Amino acid sequence: MKITEINTDFKDSSSSSSNKRAKLKIVELDSDGKEVVEIIKQVENFEEEEKEAVVGEPLLVFGEDLMLMILNHLDAQGVASCLLVSHGWSDVASSDSLWTKKCEDLWLGKAHMPRLLPGVSRLAAYSFSMMDARRSRIMTEDLCDHVWEFRFKKEAPEYWRNLDPSWKGIGPPMLRYFHPDGSQSADPDDQVWGGHECTFSTVTTFVADGNIRKHYVRINRWPPMTVSRNKDWSWELGNQLYWYSSTPDATKEGGTGPLFSA
Image (cartoon, rainbow, N blue to C red; front, side, top):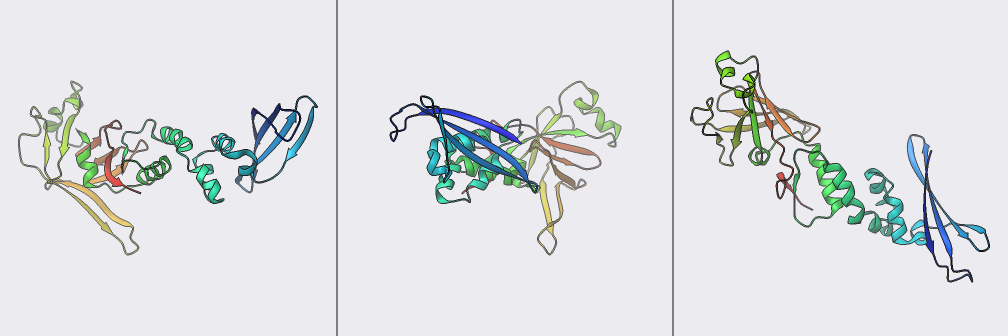
């Protein structure tokens, strides 16, 4: 059980005593595996030292400002459940002042930020970010928006590994760039690249129920690369010879990947 108290002074026009304090007590109870939040408001009259319990609709009793203080103590899932209580609760629980901090916490330490339509609410931004985080299918926008580190694996021929500065420990990984026209390029001084023409394709097949059966990226006629997503929302592509890793670019203006719009 967790109890959190918030104290605030206010004036009660119905009483001769103008100084009272509202004590908000949030009690989190574990019942059948679910968290239940019981909110109790106690009004304390300091002059008369009398206490009375106020029971009623929390939004009407506390008002929007105090309800925002209360909801700030809930996690994102708890606040989201408040959206379903009533229209009044939904207005408070969808406030940008609540979801801005939750978005910041969600995005902290992430390699990439989803591309969101400008002006979307913080609630929508959080929701779209969670949807994008669960996405395992890489899109052309993802490939083209990121710079990719390229490394050989130990299974690759020794001649190729010797051309990889990161493998020999004498430099950073080689970089690769995907382009919307289906081409791929590298830096001018890349010894592995050699200036040859290179194209890529993304292949996705589905089973009858709509789930993905196969999903891979292929460079020219080299072996297909499987796709994986990391906890920091970065991407990895790999086969038995080499692997690609998307470099962090969370500060990239406008975000990356396919567009999410309300």
